[in-house]
Length: 324
Image 1 (cartoon, rainbow, N blue to C red):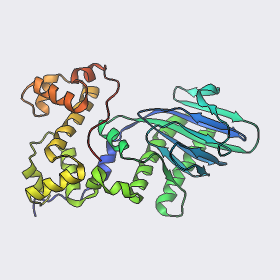
Image 2 (cartoon, one colour):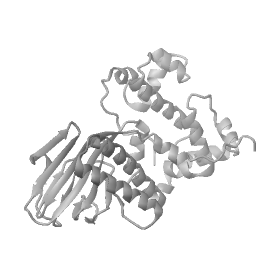
Image 3 (tube, rainbow, N blue to C red):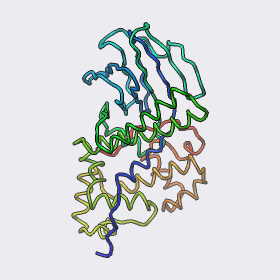
Image 4 (cartoon, one colour):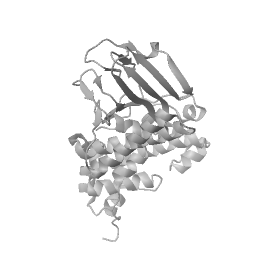
């Protein structure tokens, strides 16, 4: 039993890799009748917080939803959608409407016919870590978090009120506060969905919450360059090699060593963007005998060459291949 790890929050550790970067935030002051059509923003997560009034959210393939004060909705796939005062009413393209640019990443939009007012805080965030982009593929089209009387949700609603106050008053530093709190809200929304949604109990997300597999994944995530084998990982979580390999492959969708190799490429991708090490140095760090072998493995998993990432030529990555 001495090889067992203490209890770990492997799901929480995985969420740490979200590493969001704020792209743009907007406070919308709207008066009925009004309607906004938001464009597709691939590679981004979009969210809306209703701080006063109400509106309808329409997303193709999803039932229309009425959003009221305190409602937080997250659209993880950056899909085009519509928000309006009247269900099915006419909309204007967001890019056609004038905005007051408060800063490079924050604006105020005023639009509508002068009737009942509604205020929205809208945001677009990007995910920097390649593993986070895989997580997004496992999420539904819309994640909705409602106000409630539970202590957990009270904290969330207090954060929403804080954002609303900052957006209304626009005090010095307000953009920074809104950006940080919005990132926290996105993580909280994901945690809430994972706690309640059956989709979070299967595949990679389910494996993170499995007592043994979660520990094994945490070991890989914490120590990706260690010389792990199937046997050593199985030993650390007190399972037989065969049982561990079978359960890991069934739940994660790929064998343990394949997942380990893929995670090492995630780590290498981040290092290339942030540290810009030499390829030979990085190959050795990742446990490869040659730069050529490392480069081949990197391109196989990531779809681009390490040199292109290091130079900044690779602006986007293809969909990641881990199965759900």
